[in-house]
Length: 199
Image (cartoon, rainbow, N blue to C red; front, side, top):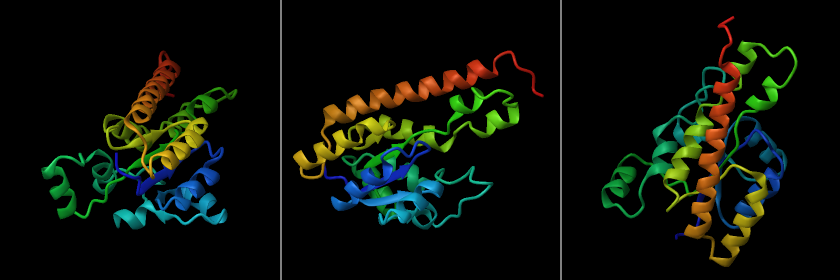
């Protein structure tokens, strides 16, 4: 496994994220981020690049479109050991993204509030987050995916032991967790919506 060089960090649950991002930066990792996470990291003094600067495409539609871009998903999904992928990424200026730390809009917390409306619930259905998580988990041979702050210290420790890389065993374990989280999230959405009217 190669050393992690570029990470995307974009989280709703910001527990420990500034410390984790600083740990990545201290290990020479370039950090891409969005919205509130990017602001928090800057305020904490962590060097960060906005995803919109990385993609050369602005956030739009009230933030609904931020990370849905080939420079993000190509960077996550590209196979580093397949010459055609490497060449196509280079042709289009797609930088490999080696670590994805993303947790999802708080749908479950939102719908647990008394009087939550359908419109309020729908706005908390994350689109870009699950896409990045699933892409990273699919490509776990080359990409580390984190959906839970409890794993931040494990990854930093692994990087220290492996000269900046994360081993395949841990990447696989984190990928399984990631798929479990997106499955749980989708089940919460479909379960809450089931039997409701369109309002």
